[in-house]
Image (tube, rainbow, N blue to C red; front, side, top):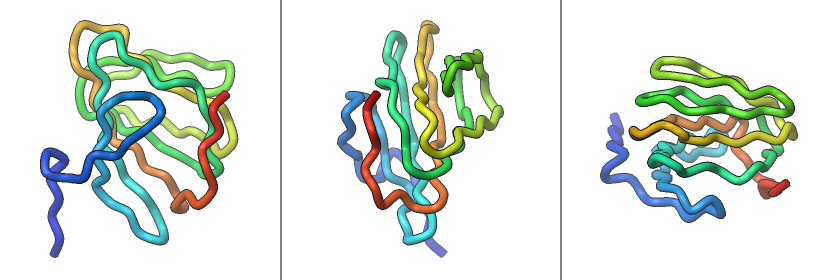
Length: 112
């Protein structure tokens, strides 16, 4: 059995400048723990694989394509491959999200 805590997991550099920890990375899938502080946001980008977000804590905004929705704890949001998306934290608290990419991404992310 392997157990990983996000506090001890490897920090992953990213073009968005937010805190990301790599929790799981195999040939089949990737799982990251992402934390957006108040006022932080991801740059709009697209991934070559499907992504889903699971909100662990707080409230944030998810933008996928032309749609934008406020999301809160215990919500799962699907983001299809090659559709531009981003996350934003306009609240005054932390917005923590589990990001899962399936299958594992092998091509680079494209900034929009």
